[in-house]
Length: 229
Image (cartoon, rainbow, N blue to C red):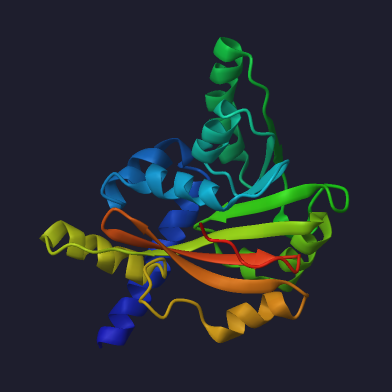
């Protein structure tokens, strides 16, 4: 009975998150703030510490928080998202920065499985809390194609949340149902295989953010030693 209930909740929440990412995109930031205990934006921006060089491509930029952070740092970053609603939300946010500070940005609508970019032009590609598209062979192939010979793909796959409060336990359950809360083992071997089969050198890395553990998959196109400092 418990498995049936969890399966129902999993399907319901995934449906609800898809609705939130599209038709209800205007409410995304509020919901993300609530379900993460106010940490969502902080988690997303933490992925920037693994970036190497520029230009950068962000897949699934959502409401644009990482875009804003990197644009303000003077980093050349582009963004791609398949949600028309998210493109509008993020564009409005970045347009305000452009009007006030004159900082340019580049967002486009499209799918990661067919990237509208030339070969080898990005030093880094980043995706935070992506849906299963990130593990599709066509997505991995496209990332390989548009990355430079020493490029890096950074994926924030999930979070391991701590805390003993009722709220913290509820959030852990919620993220567990949607498969974004992970244990210390993290990545499944067959997921790594998807990247190594294409030629990436791939590792998982746990990064401590306050009391939470952020789980990254980092795939490199180069033969350089893996750097996590």
